[in-house]
Length: 113
Length: 113
Image (cartoon, rainbow over all chains, first blue to last red; front, side, top):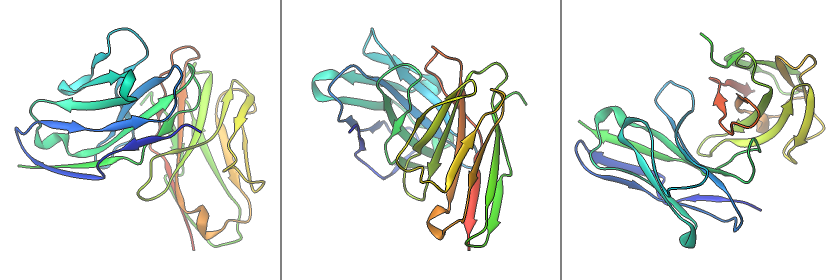
């Protein structure tokens, strides 16, 4: 069965620090990869997605992620975080377009002002 | 607001009672998904519809759970004889077939006493 593993459950950083959140998935075939974000009091929203092509994907708010097929990884990065990036981040995968999405357990990111 | 809407936002019920939640997808989105999220976990897939057809159900969806989308627009999720373990956030998402981008609603938080 597919699974998604997020390396860190809780990350605390100061503003302007660099961010990297780890994500690994278990499925060996073709996959579609996502990062979703949930800001406090808001609903889940898509941060970025990878379907095919350039493995370096750029999303909203300065986030990017790199798909490394050989490592089954899709790590999320941001060079300089802001207090407003405080949120919970979910890595996710599906196997086919429009299929159900399998989510990781999430990483709570807390940015100190 | 043209996003996915869910009602009610909160539901408190006593064990053994039946509850029903409603999801209104984004207009013209033909795919509708239900997920459940418990504390410290990412969303877990329950079921999804393409138009009015229920295409897949998770093994998490016991026989006490039933979902419908009778006219291919809004959907309802009913839980019969609720148990304390049913306490969770129930999330609805919708998408346009082929887009592989699911838009999430705010969720219905169920508390079973």
